[in-house]
Amino acid sequence: MIDQPGRPAAPYDLRLPVAAGAARALVLAAVFVCAACGLVYELELVALASYLVGDSVTQASVILSVMVFAMGCGSLLAKRLRVRAAAGFAAVETALALVGGLSVMALYACFAWAGQARLAMIGCAFAIGVLIGAEVPLLMTLVQRIRRQDAGGAVADLFAADYVGALVGGLAFPFLLLPHFGQLTGALATGVVNAAAGGATVLWLFRDDLSARTRWWLLAANVSVLAVLGAAAAAAGPFEAAARHAVYGGQVRVAEQTGVQEIVLTGGGGTRAPLQLFLDGRLRVCGTDEFRYHQALVHPAMNGPHGRVLILGGGDGLALRETLRYRGVRSVTVVDLDDELVRLARTDPGLAALNKHAFEDPRVTAVTADAFDWLRGRRRGPYDVVIADLPDPGISRSAKLYSEEFYGLAARTLAPGGRLAVHAGTPSESTHTFWTIDATLRAVGLRTAPYWIDGRECGERPGPDRWSGAASPSTTNWGFVLAGLDRPQVALPVHPPSGLWLTPALLREAARAPLPSRPEESLPASTLLRPRVS
Image (cartoon, rainbow, N blue to C red; front, side, top):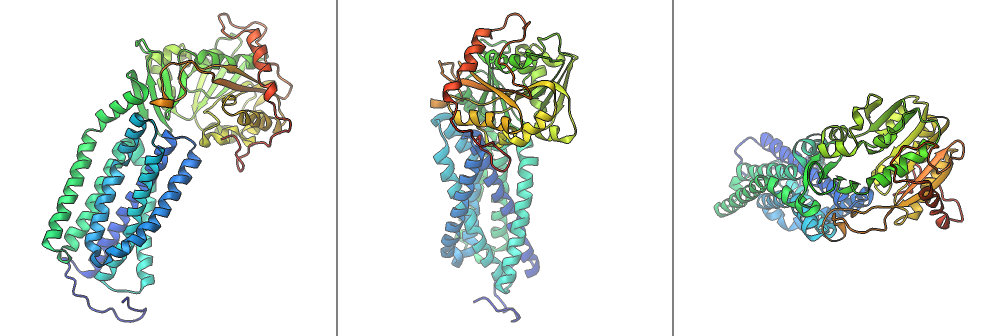
């Protein structure tokens, strides 16, 4: 029975190696560490789900919902362990360290070799949630065994330590673990900390509450888990190489996790395979067909004055390459969020050769910034041409870059007669998204000319089955919208550069292609509060 407020604490016969106050502080410290580890596991799963499955909003909602439900289940299951709270807590933390620490490796293996990870991800989220949910009831029992107090005070102390630990874990994941360790090693390191904290708390502080046999079993389990995590950390390098080989093929030359995204370059650079650039697992550039996309994006926008050009995104330098083919271009500003991608575009032999060393041109200024924030920062321009070479609109975190607010900022930078060219997704897969982007541009007062071209020769995503990265025929097309204060014309400039794949006939067909799919009623614009393109 828990004493009521104001009633003196009853003596308790639990022998502790330190004073009751210090023991209670150590238990709260364990709560802090375990909460930090638990939140890291959650964030690892959410990040991995967005990388491997896509649609970050949906995946985050599914993962977090499953975990919260599972935490409730874990709290109920923990009631059966309260009679042996110390041993139960040690067992829970040992299992959580094993499951959470190995979760990234296991799920990436499912994706690489089985072709999908969605069901395994949900199962992993449920298992981790059950174990996290079992922690608080057991810790409450341990705190009360050290020094009995009213339930409200004990709950307040536990949740204070829990929430502060969650804050530290939430900050450590993006600022420490992800950039310095990566997802795989970061999860394994978190598991080691989790196992050490849970095991040390019970095996030292509550050792007199355990039988000799139980102590040895828990010690053996903890040592085994730490050994497994250590072995996995030692094998992390070869595992990542083998998994990348399974996902991207045998020509991976560069694989980096930046603060923004995962960058993988395959082929090119002296190999016989065509260069492919993957950002967060999505095929962004394929050397055999990228010229179609970039020529269709850039050259119709250059039909008119083009002395000053702004490229939003385009850190690979390929849209920049097409822009610099015009002698009348006096200056180009490239605004990209990932400075590491820009560095690779300058220095990687394959990518730099593909963009024809565009960033070395003295007319080019590269800016590392979020395109939305950069446009909002202060009055920009005027620019004769603005090219939005941004991540696919189907990615949830890109929704703000296809919003009415973003296009309003971009339109403000246009010089009289200026044009804005926008990549508008894949119409063959989502005609609704294509026409929503068109409607959003018109909502800010721009006149539009939509068009699309066929396309891609490479697979859309890496990996086995439907994520095959091998070259194969595809009916995928690229959609674009050309916009301006005056109605723009989808046509080449009067004096286009020589050697273009794009021809006037192709552009005439590209402008006719969307017409049969135009909706009878105007679609609502996409906004920051009501994103409609993802």
